Image (tube, rainbow, N blue to C red):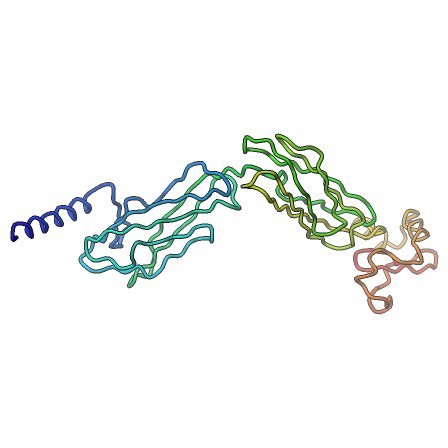
Length: 298
């Protein structure tokens, strides 16, 4: 019996010596836990397909070590420990499940292990190259500055890295003045997008693309635009046409003559009382011109 106890003790000592000097287990300076690795590279993985990583470690100190909690850098990683307290020489396993949704290309995520009695955490890294299967190009649609009561048109291409034929099953937009329809399916699906009579102001809308690929069944594309009044002046016209009152602008006079009932498409955000919310910008042959600070006529 004594021989068995001695053999077990010698085995534990030999294991501790091996783990302490083994290049397969690494210290992070100042911490009692020694890991087989501090970085796990998944290589190339596919969007929407979860993967797992395993970190093995042991307590290389002479005291019990407690892991109080683990902080993941995003909700895409879920960590699970075999235990939270480890006696001297005791081994542990940390399993991390990574969900590569919402990423494209090279990704790095961090795990912070907070130990009892230590102010700074142990840092572990997860790395991967995520194949998005379908990548919208451009990833965000910005129409820039457009006129109200006008159409703005653009095209979006879904870059297909899935190796499969793709069919767009449905298109939805956040407002009815954002129009979208499919130009073609197949290797690189193409979508036509237009703003039709958009309201005045800064617009933030969404395009929802539904596809035949289960792992990438829905794609969300942001859309933005700065919609100006139909008769709104440019910055150059505002400065040279109004600050310098001696400049005669037949174009501006024609615009005034065409305004329906003296109203502009911007009037909704300025109130109905012209004298209170709109200031005089200039004169032309005794005729008073009114407008807001953006040079929108009334």
